[in-house]
Image (cartoon, rainbow, N blue to C red):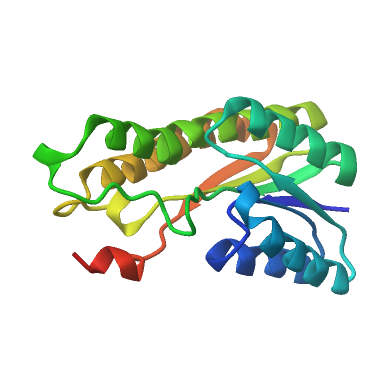
Length: 197
């Protein structure tokens, strides 16, 4: 059976994608932060009602060890990993770091780049490592943004992090392709809260 991991599955795009994978015949591991545990329990019940298996992993995707444990747990509970769809999350909304560039606190920029860029590097690496070990290929999907295609005012850190995902994805695709692993990203539009100053 095919197994998919969906991060940020507690709500929004992540939740919809998890349900779609179940409809398409995948067993689905769903991940989000611990405070989203109730939402994940409800989502897991929906997946089970579709006749698919589900596995809940509470983890912070910006923490290397937690992502490593997540991949190990999914393989142990559901079997061979085939699709990994990544999207960051914090407080129910993307990590944005809105604000005037010259006035942005350094720790805010660090947080945005850590969650949106560095964590993607770590997740791509661990997912690919598992898929290469399995020897049957796979699919890795990251989430960029329209702001990863063109920057704008007051979103410098967020935009930079999403440009980084494009570069990481292109590099990963060239390196992992020989193992039958495709790596792609998608670009959602601007969330409504980013349109409000």
